[in-house]
Image (cartoon, rainbow, N blue to C red; front, top):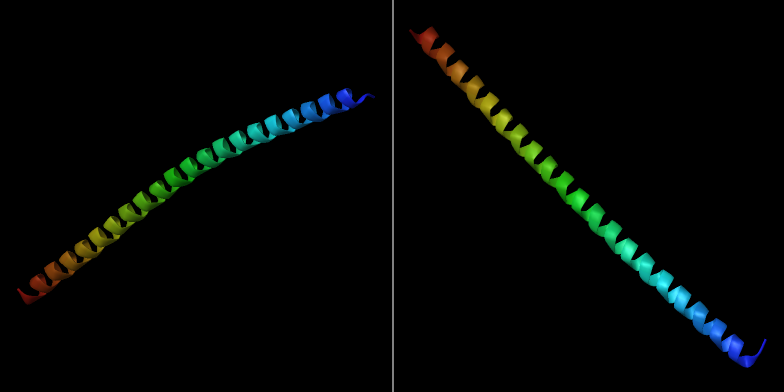
Length: 77
């Protein structure tokens, strides 16, 4: 193997490795973006579900308080 062949092989190997690294970085960034989007959507759904549950609980408390008030007014009458 001559000196020039060795230099060409080294250059080709360097280009191949750098191309592979570039592709792997792009894939990593795409996956990170995709997972971040999915995480954000799931987090938003969880927040909305918690808000709905809180509203239901508050409505149930109000309903219970109203029913107790009605019972007291019936008992007083």
